[in-house]
Image 1 (cartoon, rainbow, N blue to C red):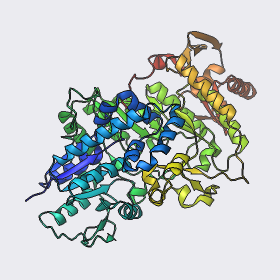
Image 2: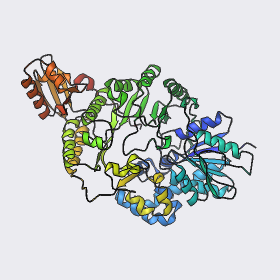
Image 3: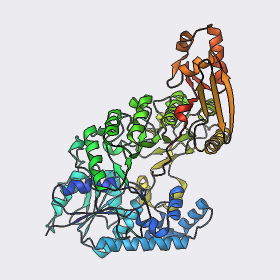
Image 4: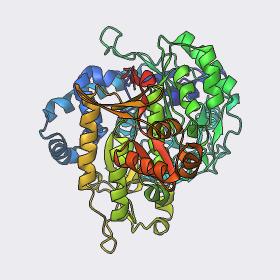
Length: 608
């Protein structure tokens, strides 16, 4: 008898997102005639606990602790204390956990109805604890079923640790899962005494319950050979459409695996891809989008690629093929991302929001984290997005190993120019990911050592938690080095607070513009309901216009504008002091935005 495969995504990915992990695996298996049931339980949790409670957990990074409370009752008191310390109150902790117990019980009951043999759990988005809880419930109800864990963060070592500490998990997949899951199915279908020894890319229990690990699986070289993701069946599970929260589904698209840049000290995004980046062709991605749009009632697209700054040609073709899309992407200031036309192309294709790798506004700090960009280039990126009408999400790092007070002062100065554009989401301490360059070779980056976040150490002090830390939290904090004290960032924090207030007071619009009147410029600076105006004649006008949409070398400006060199240099200095012209290492960028291109501001979208 042919056996069903159930693919399961539990909290805490975004509730509106269709799971690309499930969609890709389901399409791959279905193409080969295998019966697959997709179970994406993202919408059910906010429907049970309430959308406001759901958002509160996300905002305070308390995802997964509800499952830990149920899975490990001895942790309940510590977790309740954590809730109270983070939220400021216990937020009716008892009711929250009771609602979550109801959610997980209904989820378990729903999975039993699938009558599957293989239950595959994705653990990519802090899903380890919920997956452990539900899989234990399943194993207790169906001892003969096969529990399989996979996800981008699972390595061979983590797979061994999962099986060592959680006896109900049978297989952990490390590496890409399409071919591996197919091999698992073929090895176990219709054979009670199956042999998994020849399935590459897994850690498993043999017939004697001994843990074995096989050789890694070779990566897929040609992503175009993968079928179009199939999201059918993900929309609603045990919650009816009428009961479900009203969220427009977001279609997740995968155009590549890995980051083409891959040098940032804190990042491990290439870890699961053997430190390589591969991508689908433009035509393949557009074909997938076209097919999925016909199946899903949505115009929202989330591209899960880690960096699309080398995909200008794709977005040019997409803009011609589809209109009225609302797209989120991640970019950096590399390759196509160094060209303003790229951001115009993104906007024409429907990109309304981007996550952009700014990280710092000091060139020397950017060099310390191997970002490959400069402060003036980062400010230019913010300006380009403002002009293109694209919302941006980014952070500014502080307490970077090896930082100096001079670099902090340089950051504070740069903020006085950048504050006319969209502010950072937050000022966050330098942290790094597991298996990142900073973790693999800390001394190279002036790092003494790393430690898990305090809440993880306080609650999960077990041996298994130390081994599986990357699946509980994606980050590692720095151990302070008393021989290399950090600088004072307080004034930077105040400046960022003022930056956010200015942006909010201007209805989340840029705050400085220019109008070219031919012989002079009118500069308009906005602050809430108030506007200040100044008039700039030559050579100030020409300097602003020449350095408007691209960084210029000072020597080029001095030789291109008519007039005595000393007079032009003096005008450059005046504009710098007025915070209308940023100057760094002999390069210039004007800050005001041409009024007609910035008038309408950003797209009002909250989809992502």
